[in-house]
Amino acid sequence: MDAYKQSKFRDPDNLESLETRMSWVYRRTGTAMAITSATTCAAFLCTLITPLVEIKSFGIFAACVIFIDYVLVMTLFCTAIVIYHDRYEDRPAKCGCFTDCTATDPSPTETAREALKTGEADEGNGDRVSVFFRTKVATFIHVPWHRMVLFFVFAAWISVAAWQTSKLEPTKETEQFLDEDHPLQKSFTILNSEFPTADSDLGLQVYYTWGLGLVSREGVNLLFDPFLGNPEFLDTFDFNEQCQTELVNACAKLKSDDAYVPYIKRDGGVGSVACFVEELAAYSLKGNLDDCDYVQRGRWKNETWQISPENLTSVMESFVQQMSCADKTQTIMSQYSNELGWDGTSLRYASISVESENLDPFSTPSEAFTKSQYDEFVSIANEVDEAVSQYCTGSVIMTDLDQRFIFMNNQNIYLRTAIQSSILGVAIAFTVLLLATRVFHIALFASLSIVSVLVSVTGVMVMLGWFLGSIESVLISIIAGFSVDYVVHLAHAYESADGDTNERVTSAFGDMGISVLNGMVTSVAASIPLFFCQLQFFSKFGTFLCLTIAFSWVFANFIFMSALAQAKFPIANSRGFRC
Image (tube, rainbow, N blue to C red):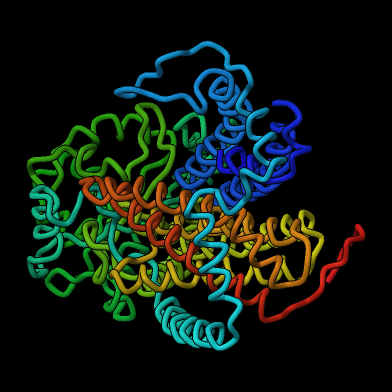
């Protein structure tokens, strides 16, 4: 629309007809809009490198929005401009309604062409914003000491922002759904963090399982179906007499080995271990679990308690219905629902669970701390598996069911995705700019401007107390896509202009200053309502959008254009790569 208005004050040959006028408008803006749309789409699609489906889906959705927006602007909106030209331009309106909607004769294009040929209109009669950018902002950039002050302020700020960015850490807690001040979120925060941990509080249950393989991912496509896969049971698993004996020995080792004290919670000096095989052994001898003292003191160990595979099914059918000595209110099947892989006809897997000394199902410590605990539990798994696996015929799988180890892995993915996607986004922006302008230093300065926006926004994120979770990872991944628009428009206008460096700077500001300003104002205005949302994603997205747009506008107008004015590299008129 800005280009359409500016066409009134340019070459009268472009105003021979509406067709020639719209052709000039298309050529004037189409390339820059195609570059920004392609770069933004590509930056959003950089999220596809992450295995996290919520980040992938957001990137795909946003890329589709940008593409459809570009198509509609280049078709539907241009159609609206033609209708505006034919029916409404240069006509008075009363109370928002035009008095006459018939086609005008002569047309606004013919009137503008005649005024331009007779000298009644010139570019100086354009909108005041364009005049301001051409005469004031461009003049400010032309002064060398003004550029030096801008570079000094820019360097100081980037140093601070880079220092803050280096302190960005993965999130240490599950991401909040609601705003901090929401009453429901306050109650969650109090319950999870304000009460001290007691020795009797439940620790994270860590499972050592034999008889299970990795989950089959065949047919899994989380973008379209929440299906996570099918469990795989190992046909080689054999719950024979020697396997039962080794499982009992593993339970005893986990309970009594002093090397495990820092990692497995102790209850009365004994490791907190859930071992259904101990109750099975006592039941095989007594036929019931009425004497829990007999079970817990292990007096059954001196007898031959092992169950032959031929009798296992009949024993298990009645055993699972017994009341457990670990909790007299629960049956064996309920008490050991996770450890006991009984399907009614066969034992598909067997597990031993231990209670973590340092992790619990509710809090989410840092990735580094959780990883250190995870590594120790893996080491314990390798130790107990040495004897068990050769008789139960199947390697152990160590996991937890509260997804603390999954969250630990996600923390690492958030950081990796943010770094990889942002680097890839900048690389894509540089490549597109280089191909579009065919001028190396313009593409380089524009890319440095995008990097500066990236560092600035992440630095402010840290200042605001944000940690790197899924929301922040998405936002950092798409910074390059959001911040490229303004610098690309100015770069394209600078490259397309004629004359020396100062004349190109003036022309770029005159052509694109108002468009870039309008884009900044509308985007910032669109982000303001998001500040008041209770949902964290929208609230943070509003803050991110406002910061990214503001920094992009400042760096594009004052740093990028100052860099071009300072470098004063000539640009040849011949095709090919130039510098």
